[in-house]
Amino acid sequence: MKSRIIIRIIVYSLLSVLIFYRLKDFIFAGKRYSDIEIDSLKFAMVRIINNERQDNGIPPVSYDSVAAMSAQYHANEMKNHGFFSHYSIDGTPPYVRYSFRNGGTYAIGENVALGINYKILKIGSIKIKGGIDIKSTIAKLNRDMYMEKPPHDGHRKTILNKHYNGVGIGIAYSDTLVFYVETFTGNFIKFLNKIPDTTIAGNFMDIYGQILYDSLDLVSIEVFYDSITDSLKSGETFFYDERNTYSYSDDADLYLPGNASTMSLNNTNNIINSEESEFYGSIYTERKGYYTIVPILSDGKELFEGANVSFFAK
Image (cartoon, rainbow, N blue to C red; front, side):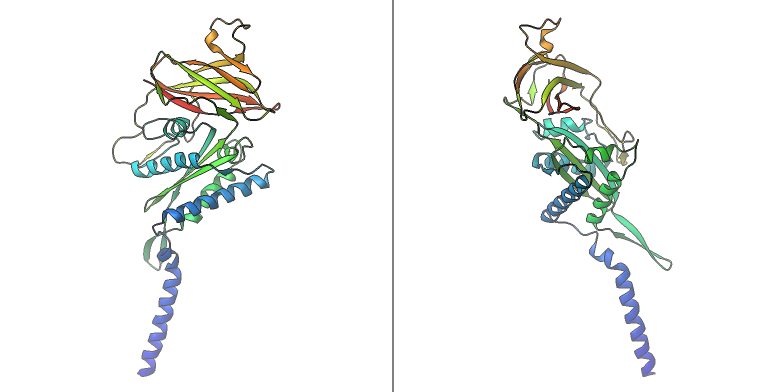
């Protein structure tokens, strides 16, 4: 009798160890992360991104705190409002969020990804729902984007864009979902005047900037207009934006560099004066809405965006 009890104790002990082993990921995962731990995850992701860039012969990116503010803002709003999109809950695009709401002036590109924050473990006929380590989840989200194949490789192109030299990471999570945002930036232009967040429609907005590298030339300045939009979602159901991408508005004005006193155009307002590395001019705000100023640069081989500044005309 005594030996049977001992055997049962041993069997139960072994079963307990086995169950603990199967559940250990659930016990230690799905936890609440401190701000310090989340920051550590963000820097770990920057290292992973730089490894991917290095493997393709592309210079590394540094951590951009303003881009990180924009990325974290968007991760938080997707979690808090129950939606997934490049666009903010108020319908504004990423470049407006980065510049108008977070004060950024660099060229930007954004990746967003959505992960599942749980898995189902089966032990016999029993199903247990448990958490997943967020670090492994976001690493997989990045890896999936990096491994994309043409023609559906927009995220990969953003990660490997040689004209980006900074990145900010945003991470937010609920009991069931992980929201992950990468905001890449390119620092090529310094604006020498402070462009206000708001102006009055019908006025001119002055810009005065300097190209930071002698090897780059100003090709044009494009000004994109976005109207005031409605909220992306209404109600309590989760909204998934099937556009899965974003782009600048088709509603745009083109400003060309030159000397206003020597060039003859029907609309002299569409000339940006350019002297050596500096440029200056005025942007006309015809209507109420968001305006985004995007200087286009050339390195002698290709054209790329040199900056991104948004303001609101009311």
